[in-house]
Length: 396
Ligand SMILES: Cc1ncc(COP(=O)(O)O)c(C=O)c1O
Image 1 (cartoon, protein in one colour):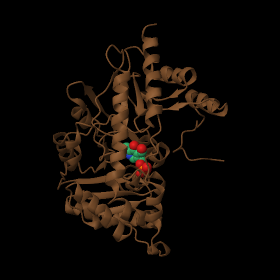
Image 2: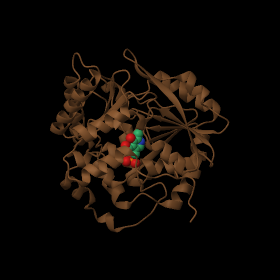
Image 3: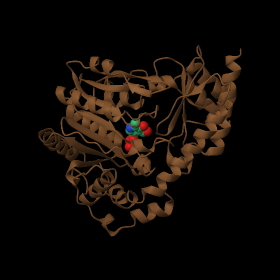
Image 4: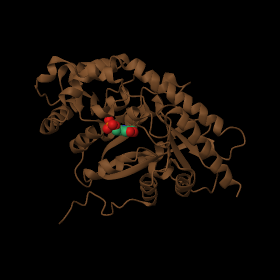
């Protein structure tokens, strides 16, 4: 049987996954600092809210629209208006998750063999989503300084363009660094992309989760009248309900570019009609009710961030990198430490699951990534074990 070469020919689990499978099979209790699924962390919409959201007579109708139900798009448009981004419902396309939106946008802009620019470090699934469209991932780096936090290396960004570049992905705030590209930098990047006729896919799934002290970053309503910007988000992060499978694309930019992209995107969306009616109807009542849902998530993120601060307090060989937002915390390991080996030993010796930095394409093997969504007691236990193990290895 011949299979597509879009998939890696070796799908066998790596050493870490193998060890994890064995521990799970043997029933060993594990402290999991990788969970980023709100319902599994007690942070999804309450069952009554979901039942109410789905208990609507219109559930019996099916009136498909390639862009999604007008009433659901109006709810998404109001979500942006609340952020200061005036939005017409025609500028919104609904899809079955943000991941599905990527598949549609890559079909819209790229042919097999084309290049897509992606931040480094960033969300590991980008490479897979791009490879599944037969395209190539080209990374542009960000660098970190204690004073300025994370900044995109703009020179390297410019150099990463090739004759086959068809789209740029930016993530605000980035996963896992939690950095919001500053408005001046975003604006320069938008100018550059507009000049090259290259669209920006602006992934804002974590936009509503600024860290304490960074809340002003989540009110930037700026929009760019040139080029083409496609903002992505969805219910999985905005209301903590990934099981509803609803994402969206919001188009903005130069009129002709928006029109050309919308016509073609409508054709692609029509071929799949991927957004489910129940999910769209649920969005209409859950989006306006997002305030308390997001507040609970932000509270958990803040509490766990503080617990990590204590675990890695004075004298620790590791340090926590500054986090402006998002659901993750990055630990910078002592020089010479190996993230993969440490992750393996945390798993088999301390029974704590963490993600090594290399999953996210950190250039050196010196970072761990912790999910701050983890239930607080479990997080405190896990982060203390992680800090102790790092100290023990640093003083070997
Ligand atoms: C940056 C980023 N984009 C997109 C997604 C996928 O979101 P969805 O659940 O809507 O497919 C994730 C999931 O964690 C993510 O971290």
